[in-house]
Amino acid sequence: MSEKLSHVRDDGSLAMVDVGAKAATARTARAEARVRLSDAAATALREATLAKGDAFAAAQLAGIMAAKRTDELIPLAHPIPLGAVDVSFAWDGATTLRIESRATTVGQTGVEMEAMVAASVAALTIYDMCKAVDKGIVVESVRLVEKTGGKSGAWTAPR
Image (cartoon, rainbow, N blue to C red; front, side):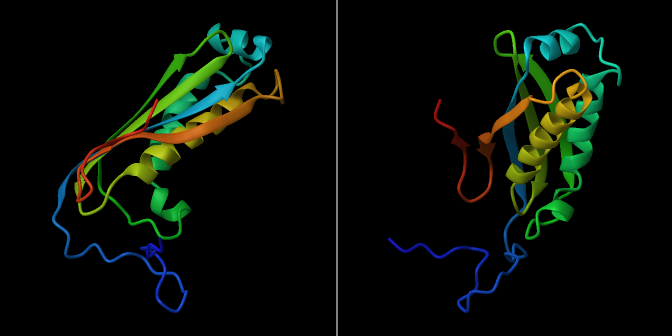
């Protein structure tokens, strides 16, 4: 099965996809990243005793700001007028932090990359805020969880 890649021309060069003729529709995307911390780093994060300050506020703001600049980070991504970006945190066990991001727009292309960039940068910010306690923190499994809208419709990641 040979599927044509949307960002590759017939001669092999790269191209930004032309979305100009597509209808603007409501689109959403949710993504997540996981951060695995040591007991000491997780405790410091939970108890807000990190030397750098409020890691959750810093990571939330960093994720939102990063989503707004996705087109500057991902070479063939379109600049998108975002309707909303949200970044939230939940603990999956004692030492694994799950970061979830959600991005929305009404536009001609989706916001999957914006949601994934938000989750990724929020996770990296948690690392930065906690690295004085433990440099062995692991950022892992950044992934799209769900998307809605557009020609391909709704999609949800398998559990």
